[in-house]
Amino acid sequence: MRKFILILISICLLLGITTSFAEDKNTYKQRNKTEKNEEQIRSKKETDRKTIDKSKIDKRKDLKQNITPLIKLVSENKEKSNKLTQQSKESYRNAKNHIRKLMEEKDSLTDEQVEELKESLEILKNWNKKIGGSRGDMRKITERLRDAKEKRNYNRIKGNYEKIIEIQNSRIENLNKVIEDLDNITDI
Image (tube, rainbow, N blue to C red; front, side, top):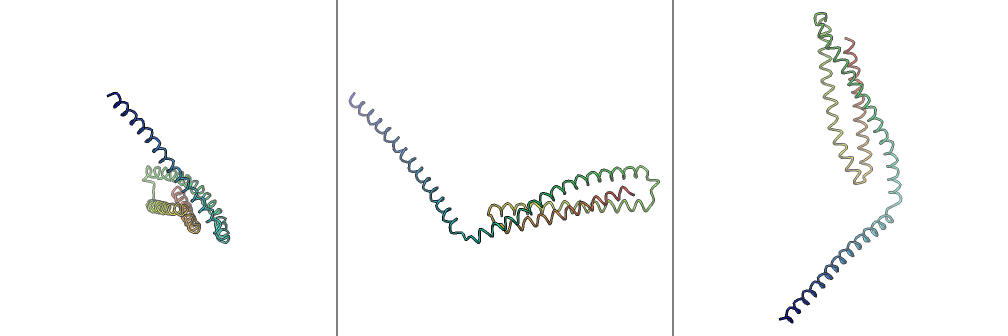
């Protein structure tokens, strides 16, 4: 019986040792495969770099140089837009306070002033819709811009920046008009 138990124990030990070596061989094979894959990727990148035409590289550099001023203009327009938004909020508060004062003195208002107030309020509602509508357009374009950046498509990147600038310019123009309309309300 003792011999049988000793044989079983030795078999268990041998199996345990061999399985641990087998696991090590598998992990070694996997590590070797990933190293080979990384090596293949590196060599492919190097060959791609060598095979790319210098003219293509020059075109990319030119496009990148054309995109840089657009990026600066987008950030400048964003700052302008933020300042004008703050200014329009202040003008809106002033116009609102002025309307409240006029409403308290309803009896002293002429029919012309009442008509001007109604027109001004209608104009403001329309401006609010126009400015709010451009936000959705901006989101779509920024999503397209991200996609173009991921794919490194410089022509699309440039086009998207130009569209962003166009929307920003119209937004700035609209904000200026809104501020002007709000200031006109305070003149009533």
